[in-house]
Length: 54
Picture 1 (spheres, rainbow, N blue to C red):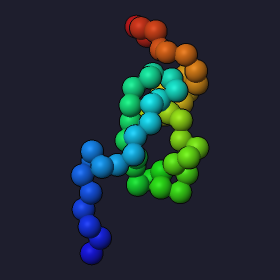
Picture 2 (picture 1 turned 180 degrees about the vertical axis):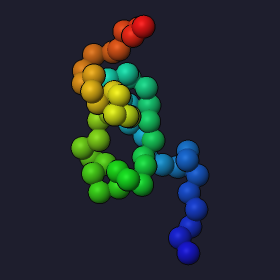
Picture 3 (picture 1 turned 90 degrees about the vertical axis):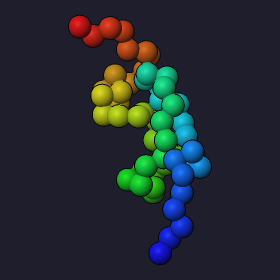
Picture 4 (picture 1 turned 30 degrees about the vertical axis):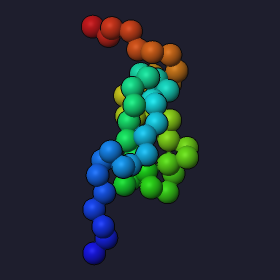
């Protein structure tokens, strides 16, 4: 059985859209170098910081 990791031990990046840090996820395992956005919502913005969407 693989050794458990703490979330604090996983690599992190900063989202290109919202500027918030996000942590490595298993589903990004093969493509981590190309991941730029923390979520689908941020990926749809693609760029500058989001302004208040009301």
